[in-house]
Length: 314
Image (cartoon, rainbow, N blue to C red; front, side):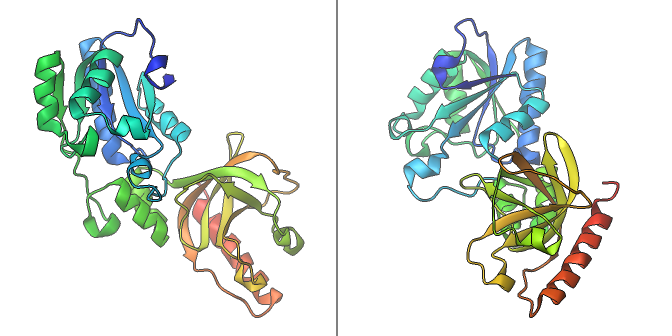
């Protein structure tokens, strides 16, 4: 799969494309449907599939300070898209100047001149151009002018998550923020993941017999609600069952919110400076302040036991 940042990186000899455009944060199950359809149609038409997305999130440029928590960074989204069979991912730098493009100019620059679109696949709520003036009806009209087709898919998927609310990035973010990582996984089609570099913390876990990887998460990461979780810690493609703590360590009067993962039954791991991923399988309990170290250790032992049981064989 090819990855491009900006239209100037698109090869000059790039042929006709089947294109889908959006933020695709989390590449959730609705996104997977639309991207998968674009991939399938590209193969049927003898064209190549391209996903177009934006960096930073458009809301941060249009309404500074409104950047939503991210379910997945761009490189993770590209990996997930590649697994769906996409031929290329184009990340467009979303600048103030770019935000001023009219819907017609956006189509001409990106879809026509840049990607030579043969077909564009979108959901019914797709908007584009300055002040989101363009919709799928206008896109189809412009497709008639510029010789590309438009297919609109119904992306309404529901399940138990969010009391039956339609799957969306907004719903997934809310579930993560509430600590409902089981619901978020239903929307995403996989456990929610955060990633970052392991940094030195207070090293209390090591002193207590539970050395943890203190993960400095990437900017704007959607971090689950404070509490203790079962999940996995992945380092260099090795996935290890883990008990995960999110919060401020109230027993020690901490103030900084951290994500710490204890790799269950692993001894002698030296992860400082390494990039790791943490996947959240299940919520175990809320964050508590204990009256004694002994009480904390008893609860930690129970947390590890439950995390081991939940991740066993998964």
